[in-house]
Length: 165
Image 1 (cartoon, rainbow, N blue to C red):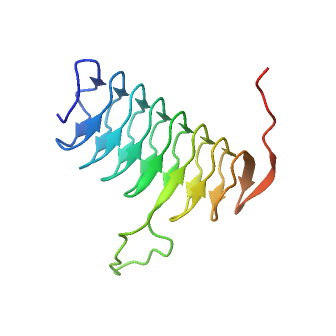
Image 2: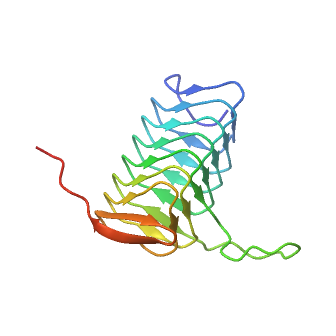
């Protein structure tokens, strides 16, 4: 079941590649699929039905909610929230019957960013640290750090207000 310690909880229905690396304190829920060479940090929660493709790297204390799909090349930094049914789609121009080379795609979600439910993130798009993506957004271009973006296509509407106090 991969490289993990007794401090990782994996639901019996989850499929985890032998080459995946899972950090201590991480919980992997039912019907999750984690592919070859994926790396998941410490203290994460991977929700029901999540798909983590090969070579995905997830930092510490990340929450990936139910039915989200994270595809090859994605880097998720520490403290990120990914809401339910979020998809990092790996093909910008899908077409039936065509086979394309999808290698070389890369995404990055910066530290502390939040992505709302049912959002779609297109290939090669980066989301800056602390950014907020509103539910149902389609993110077609890079999002600056601290920006609040939403819509289809998602646009930066304002900077996130500092909530520290």
